[in-house]
Length: 579
Image (cartoon, rainbow, N blue to C red; front, side, top):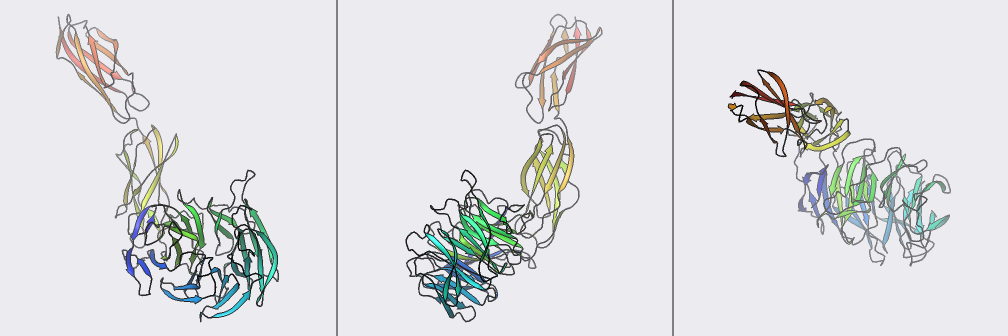
């Protein structure tokens, strides 16, 4: 069963239910949040396919189209779901489909297959046209719609589909028209309503092309005009593109690439250079497999293939400069799939639903997830000043940084977390994040390692429901740890026999250094003099031996000078000396 998490916290656990639609099983989360507050939900439908190639989301008619990618020409349906994850129909076709594209007005769905490109009316679900391809081949085609035209790829040989030369075609009536553009291996096409006149073409990795390219085309005129092109390998051949998916931002200014070798690349669409601010890396061990921007420009979804409890899906603000923590999904069970399938993400136009196709580790079973991120975000803030417990920070001793976080909107289903950084003369040190109590209070724990001034900065980076809070800071003076000297001396002694004083030196905080010697002074009626210093053993004990020089009250004072982490201390004992 999958887990929805903020910063690794499970925020919802899904319970199984069966939909009335035949052959479908779904999961839905229990309602465990304030009645007036937004919460992320996840509904899951088992897909009746054994392989997968494409998904298209039609927000106008609230339909999701999912197709197979079997090359044995026996997969003869496009499966149609509503926005609740229920199967509502299918589109019969002659041979296996491999790609789909939606017209800008959502009126026509185009499906690529071996003989050519099919067209379906999205209202009646009836076939309305067919474009005959140059070759009836077994290799998968990709299809895109841009500039009011249909574009598709073609590899005219059944064997070597991933290595042979592929061509890019346009359409004229019912015939394919060669654009003149071609390259080795399989070519992936991406288009969408974000930029209705742009086609993004990316080359899949193959043995014939060790450094695949990414490029864009302007489809607004009668012929395609190629824009910028980029290859990603360096002079040593490292860093080449391992393409899994491409997406365009809602404003068309950015292109995101799911690169299995690199993660999520964010590019400037104008020249395909790296965007000034990148997205944080995917979780360790996760390989990028899909990427999609929400149509309203609010979110980006980043899918990956990961094992165990490592998140397979991150839903976060589309602006990479927004530090709000992502909503994390870890798919790790037989009811949900194990990872996001390549090209397996799509959004509704309003950003209220994310559709995700997951698969098992073998790529033989598939699921459709309908995820609803919260519709709104609320403010957060630290209230009052930070304080310390105890009041005086001491080097080497536990210290609590106490504060309070206030959240607007609904109460979170699970505690949120705050993090902190200590800055001192040694630089910055990140402290372990801590959960915030139900009343908003929290205590960040630390053990200062340096005497002197230190500044603590506490942060809440937000979550999918709450915006980040402005950092709260506290400056403190870290003191040396105290030491204590204890003496055990006889009440009386004689000049002839002398005396022995036993003692113990203890220190708080870090362990006392080895090789400590203590000063010893004796004060009697003849004055004050310094005696031989006393050596401290590893267990902190020491001994002072003396032959008094005068009778009467004799006072012995033992002193520790302190060290870099410990303060000085003294102790005294008075002995009555007789002849």
